[in-house]
Length: 348
Image 1 (cartoon, rainbow, N blue to C red):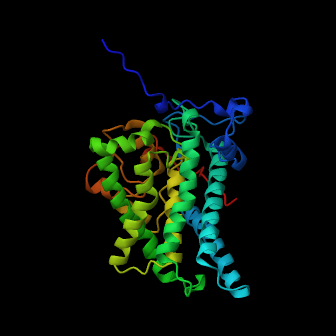
Image 2 (spheres, rainbow, N blue to C red):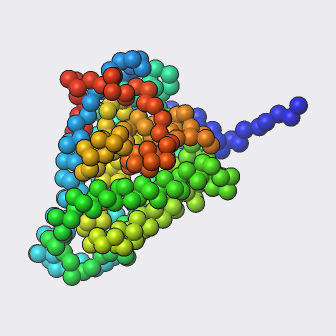
Image 3 (cartoon, rainbow, N blue to C red):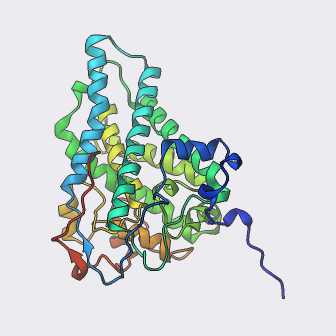
């Protein structure tokens, strides 16, 4: 009988943080220097049974978090124009790329502190996966791609020097951010489900599913084809769809849309044990049809799914509900929610 040998690159063993640091390379040191670990090794993580009530996280705090952090770069940009002059497109790209990086790093820091307070889903069975020993370089390469490719595409396609931040169409923003998430989720659902159900695409997606208990750094841990589609392909297709639908989608509106998406992507891979919805201005409406996405939904997609799976959406459950690919929540069901001891995501 033939012995099946597992590909060493499929290993999710993560021990590198305890190695002699002389064995580290630049990728290890970058993660350490930025302190973007999902937990602190010297701190306890609360462990809960499945039947322990899950704290509710009021959604308004997520909107506040995204809007405040997304607005700071726009304020700085406007002040630069007022007192110095019009920046070049290259400077705009560098500035917003750096801003995206700093906001994302700050979110990871905040979520780590929250994790040490409330714990994680399925924590009684398995801890969160760390960045695998064999995937540290790949993880860092993906993170650098995020902060380079998305801002570059945004600047090239939508930036107009004659439109300063003060020109943002605030009235449209509440519609654009909500619709953008649903439209992006349609294209993502289409690719994501196809990647699970066809051999041709599964080969590019399977790496992302090596983690059963993901953490924020593994959000974009995938092969190159999926990485490109997630980071550039889906946002560009969504942008084009929104323009065809008649939305203005100026540079600054798109920036806000992407900040909502990125916040949810990072939060959605954190596994934090709380009732948290993917942040969307339309959540109350989606909830009427049981189409809102909870943090546990995508966590279950990783934990229980492989080639055959469910919960393919990453921003909503609109398309999962319409195409009957939702699954039952284990810890976050309605009878197990704690509305008294709520969970908070601090601004800093």
